[in-house]
Length: 273
Image (cartoon, rainbow, N blue to C red; front, top):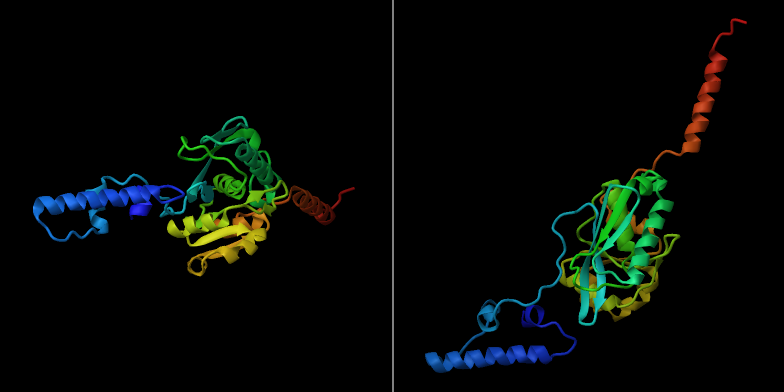
């Protein structure tokens, strides 16, 4: 608990200071109250160190529409990254908030193009981008965020918001996305999987190219997590969404069917000429 709630660093200097602080307070109580032994438990840490300074990401309790759990790498380890998407009536504007870097903004644009190219198969009207504004937001706006590895998460959040299908709360994902919907490799897989395990995530979606990196992951982490390697965004949606969206009927098929029906009706009709 001292490491998790009172330090956030790459080394152990902060931890050393916190332990020294506990020892000083324990010695002071020992001298003032004439106690010969002081036992420090997790429940007593707030008494010695004060209010918790840091918290770590936890999985959501309920499945949400337009909200995806991503995975991020930081200098002090992995973190759970919440990705939110909302679709409102408008004129086709794409809004991006949350202190995002240039690469992440480009990933949002790529994700929207992937959704537009698969709109009919996902049960989304082809002109949704003309009549609605799309808003992508990453909470904790004071923290700068960048990198391409949230691409699959953004795409999944968009599909969920447009189809109104909830995303499974126990699923986290990471991976860069291309315009064709292919999922590319990412870095920092070990730290990201450790963060998912710590946050109570059950299933983690990773790029297929990162399977080789699983050799570096401790066995107990791999046993507790259900790791799903994927190559295409269609596989991601199949795992992450509560149920698959129903495709829209093909316009060409409908026209052919109507034409055939019209011809059969004309044959059955009695001519008076």
